[in-house]
Image (cartoon, rainbow, N blue to C red):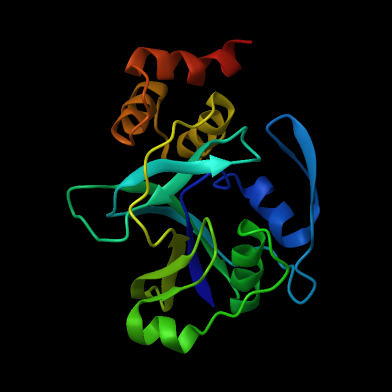
Length: 206
């Protein structure tokens, strides 16, 4: 079993389950089909809040999000930085399925022995091309996540994408809109804190 540290838009459990169990998911106003992990579609054994000591930022041009940026974390540990995440205790089969899905693939070749020895494994993918082992043993299992192996140029995210992450931060870490807006501002979002706050609260007031 593996603790998957999710720091993006799938901190909401119901959204995350669609990645494992298949179904339709609304992404940027469009219903998108997701394939089930046929070999293991059980719910996560456990889930809990988690903090990653690496910088969180937005980069790349996602076609799903109208060529705006999506979330990544830095490749190097930095105790002065933090990324709010949610841990899901899942199987190796499920982790492979998630990693492939996030890269638009049906399968992928992950070598967990390589990751355990090197604390990472790199791939020739465009978006999420490095798996990182954040901890060797947390409550009996390794903690893993994925990001990009390069230092990427920042790119502003869409407001809808920020709202999705914000919903997860509020539910999992009990953060309020002011704290979340400051968190996004530190994560290279090129908007004023008040503008970010307005985006985050617009959905709740509508």
